Amino acid sequence: MAESQVRAPPSWKHRPEGGTRGSLALIVGIARHGGRGLARLCLYPITLYFLLVRGPERRASRAWLARVRGRGAGPWDVARHIHTFASTILDRVFLLGGQTWRFDIRVHGLDPLVALVDQGRGALLFGSHLGSFDALRILSRRRPGLKVRIVLDRTQNPVLTGIFESLDPALAQCVIDGSQPGAAIALEIQHALQSGELVALLVDRAQPHEDTAPAPFLDTPAPFPLTPWKLAAALHAPVLLCFGLYRGGNRYDLHFEPFADLATAPPPRAARAQWLQQQVHAYAARLEHHARRMPFNWFNFYDFWSGHER
Image (cartoon, rainbow, N blue to C red; front, side, top):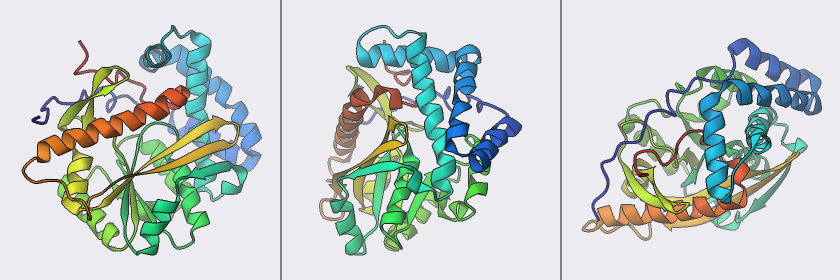
């Protein structure tokens, strides 16, 4: 099957950040100096703001919850969804500040990743906008010396990114800027893998003008980006999926799933397009599995199916 040339809709990319630099800095200041309990009280007016002011996100939340649960979603459901998202954003203050001791993070499926690290091999960690990607930071605490590089587009949510980097100045050194040209990103990732580092990136959301392939997701084809899979094939890298799911309070589940080792089983050259489609389908199936289990962890607040749904 030939890969799709349908382009991903740009609407998610063009949505403005929620809140001003001053308001975001205020919340971070309350968190750092007043503690997590006091800061969590601020999540209620933040949730109310999104409910009243951010119409596109509110409608996207309602549509998602109705689809994934098979029944209508009311204002309370949408409020819970937004509150879950805000909770994980707030927790980044503490995770980036090295205060992982505040959290009950249960790690599942770590052994295959440890085996790769013990062999001195790097690996790609493919995540999504489902739950918290920052729960990955527990790895450096449990495995001293392990370096995780994160591919992050600094032009998206620049105010929030700048505030979080100020919490951990070393964070900027661990980020591979996803706003660079594709060749520069690939070269940085290749160097990191050759150094035995882990490279984490989100692979559920396509950039504007990026080639995508459709895959069944909640019974309807959705566009998924092809670039991560092309990159993995070109670098012959091991790929693991990771999901940092928020369970409420201070609890997270961090799941690792071996997906493909392209060093030992490279994709066939003669059937590369079919192979790419298979990877996207398999990934979408795992994303759907976890999204159905934890629907309020879904943080794609836009029409994820746009471009394919009829």
